[in-house]
Length: 465
Image 1 (spheres, rainbow, N blue to C red):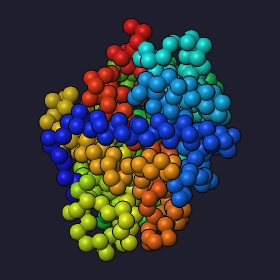
Image 2: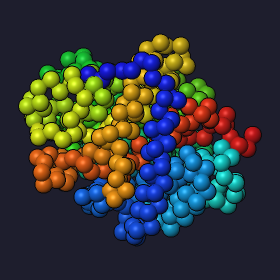
Image 3: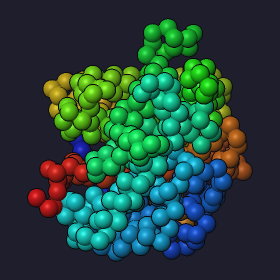
Image 4: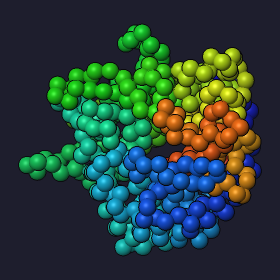
């Protein structure tokens, strides 16, 4: 299990984070310059060069969002101009994309980042650009919320690209689109002028996810271990009845695909930060704020505990807890991860996503006076320390990635396996690199005592007030 360094502090990681950003300052602009934006976004590397893999178009915002994160961390205006220009040129089509559950990735990382930077005073507040970003975010939140499968009354979920029967664990992080659109005063307009409250729809999706995708050790089925996550949950759309767990990228419905768990951990933790800022009246009449916060916290704690217990000592997990080759690795949880082993790949992208969730959850609990928050916070910093170092940091200037040993779709065999190895290793992913930069920015801001990094608009960090 993860060996938490209880003495580590944010300032201890500043040098490592700055090294990550120094690499990104060369690699990200070069990749944007060489990548034809009209063809969509880069997905993962093969032999160190970014390429595409058709499934859905969900990574383009990470590329341009990375340039905006570079500006945020370094203050170099050139990176902001690159990110803004590419957002203007290529991201509008994603705003109204009705076919995906990924708006929290594509739109928040671009239009959301630009609006946040204006709100914080990091760039000038251009009224026309502000209105354009706000409109994009409002439309995006409503479009995302419209992908709705009703389970009766107010219950339901934002369905995945698989169709109305399918709830993905990943989608918890796209709730950011609903949250920001709600904060901007928007609603989803439906038939006969029905107004759908985006906050209530956010809460309903999160409750459905917690109920069916996350396990709490209550004997729901034979494999009900507290904190385990099912990647996909399948429903009968005619009756609204839950049918079974499923998976697209995991080994089985009854094991845990670790990136799916990481999405859950990060998503619930950042929503706790958002929801606590809202007045109780915005939850009414369907929900009670305290009860919602307790449910989100219960869910985040459960998956955080599972992650800590089922990850090697350095905090970088193998791609799935049920992967059959793990049996060949012996006591793999009692030693650091081994990305060059011959049996199962690790997934560094799950590590950078989970680390952010652990830090956010830990901080949230600490602010409540809950001392258990120190464990989660320390766990997140520990994971970050290891993933921002060898053998994970991509120091080779000829390799376009930032963080090595990321895995996309192991069951489909999409990931590149070098000739001298038996499992995927040595490659990067666009979501892994972006979330590494997000994690680094979060740590830098805390270490520098700068405004806390969050996806939503916080008046306490506004440069306008």
